[in-house]
Length: 241
Image 1: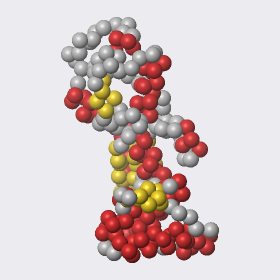
Image 2 (image 1 turned 180 degrees about the horizontal axis):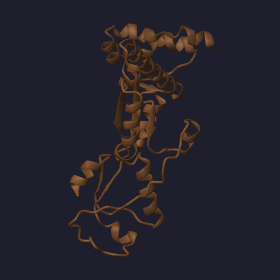
Image 3 (image 1 turned 45 degrees about the vertical axis):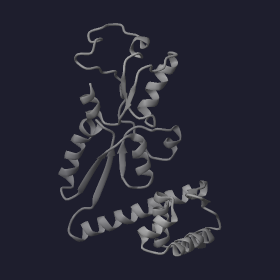
Image 4 (image 1 turned 90 degrees about the vertical axis):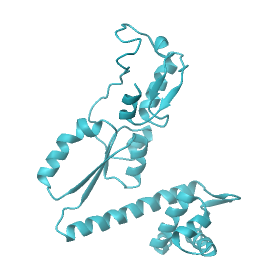
């Protein structure tokens, strides 16, 4: 397998990354400015090198199997590492101090990062620092693909604790927030049954916070009976209230 990996070329990784996004050989060929037969041959060459089939051929596109998904993740990670190398090399060549990309969940950028960013800028004034806000589930993907260097967020699966080095920063309380003119404003000793009948704005189902809130309702034998708006945007939620 070591010899097989040595035969994988940069163009193979580019091809896999594009095919992983399009799931279609024709579209992949168009983006790479090659013919569809040439794209078919590249895929066959890759599968021959790895001695494994990576995609199921369907009537309308391609679907990666388990080995295919693993290979696509590697391709994305390798290309991200290459881009990061080029960016940092150019920055260092021009007298800079490289790049640092931090992913952060909404809210943490203001509460956790502000002081840290100021300290980083004091110590490394020429460092190019980029902060990206996104939900934890997406940040985990970016971290695995090396599109970000570190993240401030939550694990979305216990298995991730063995995959990454991490440090606990704080315990985060989960609060229910209503608008200033909500009929329940000022009410005391509310139970979950009273709250479940109102419209809710919640984080998307794939996020760790949403799973916690769903679990709270589930433990109380309740389901949200009114319409639910899902959004990762804290500012949008405030506007809706």
